[in-house]
Every structure is written in C-alpha cells, then in structure tokens.
Length: 284
Ligand SMILES: C[C@@H](O)C(=O)SC[C@H](NC(=O)CC[C@H](N)C(=O)O)C(=O)NCC(=O)O
Ligand SMILES: [Zn+2]
Image (cartoon, rainbow, N blue to C red; front, side, top):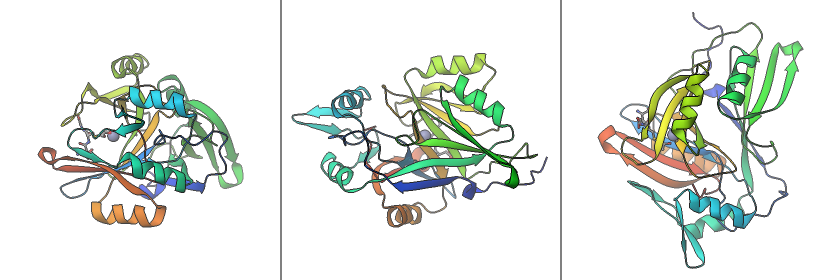
C-alpha cells in the first residue's frame, strides 16, 4: 500500500550539539563510542555510513573494554588502534588530539514507524534497549519515543516518530542499517527468532572480513546489523546510509560536521568501498 508519507533519507535526521561539560573525564584513549558513519559505495549508489560521536567515559575500564574488541592493542604506554582487514585506520596520536579538541557529539537519529508500541516492544525485548521517554504532540498529530542503551546526555539514541493514522512507510534504498554491538550474535539471533523477529542474514563472518555479523529486520522493515564485539558502553554503534558519491559525501561530512575520515574498508570483489567518519575517533 502506498504510504501517505514517503520518508526519504532526509527522514533520517541526526541532531548534534556541542557537548556540555561531561560528568565523566575524557578518555585518555580514543573515545569508545558510539555510533559511526560508514560510507560504502557499490557501483551506482550504495553507501553505508555511521557517525562517531564523542562520548567520554572513565578511562581505565574503557581501555580494557577497547582491548576486548581486539581493535585496540597495548603498545608500550599507548593503545594502538588496529586496522582491520583491508582497511586503514587513523593513528592513535591524531585521534587523541582530536578527542581533546572536538566537543561535539551526535544526539539521536529520527525515523518514522507505523506502530510505536510494537516497535518499543521489539527494541526493548529483542535488542535490549530502554525506553527513555515519550513525547506526544496531539496538536501536530504525532508522538515520539526515545530509546537507547543509556541516558540521552551521554548516549546516542533512537527517536521514533509515529504520525497519527500512518501505519506504513517506504524505507527507501538509501537507508542501509543500524549497527548494534553484541557479545554473542548467534545467541541474540536465537532470542529474536524465538520472539518472532525476522532474520535476514544468519550469523557468520562478514563477507570480505572476519567480524561475525547477522542482519535482522524490525517490525517496519528497518535493518539492524548485529556485530559481535567485546563489551561496550554504547552498543548502538553504526548508522549505514548509502550515497551516490563517496568523495562528495566525505567532504560534506568533514566540512559540515567537522568529522574526520577514520578508516576505510574496501571490498573490491563486492565492488564496495566503506569509509568510517566521525567527529571523535572510536576505539572500535
Ligand atoms: C563493517 C560492517 O559494519 C558492515 O556493515 S559491512 C557489511 C556488508 N556491507 C556491504 O556489503 C555494503 C554494500 C552492500 N551492497 C549494501 O549496499 O548493503 C554486508 O552487508 N555484507 C553482507 C554479508 O553477508 O557479509
Ligand atoms: Zn555495518
């Protein structure tokens, strides 16, 4: 059924704010978190992006967590961000400098759903998110629900929008997926399957890489990638969008959002190049 509101990519909005002084000290290490913008280009127009955001946490505990991901290794007094296969990573030195200088962070991503309670149930029971708050604006005929893995003043969160009377949307080909870091992809997939969730790609190493991933769909058809990683304070770690011109997008995110290209991951055999950008380097 054609939807009355067609959410284009613009329906995925990111709000950013210069972060106020955070209650927690800046990490001495690359900030762990958070969500990332990855750009990937496939032939004509497919891109994946996840935006880093600054999210500082206590240092030592996080450094152990970072090391648990295998992406960061102790090197003398430094932790070295390891480049994953077929990818390059920014050096830890310029990451630390960047963390000190840049205080912006991404707040939330907004998208429309056809049944708020159905989505809240799925995100809380299957993905382990918490419902942080709801806001109903009857005069504008819409309701928001905010969900995530921690409070909004320190975590990147999802802002769901329900427009009264609209029960379905075309998601469009521009949106790729959200990435959720979990410690056991297979176990999470079985939980979701048992609750009637849709698994669109069974657990296994990502094509062209080694990270164990799986793909699932939420009740509206939005895709979530489950990535097997060590413990992290910010499991909501990626938003994948597809763009038509990788270089143009990278330049825009650098100039408009002050982001830096953090790493690249090319899979020529799959005709895709993937770039990770953000305003704070992540130790992922
Ligand atoms: C880095 C990790 O978070 C990824 O998301 S890579 C996953 C990989 N992505 C692509 O292939 C992007 C191009 C694709 N044509 C698209 O438009 O989505 C992926 O989806 N691999 C599939 C697999 O089974 O490994
Ligand atoms: Zn991904």
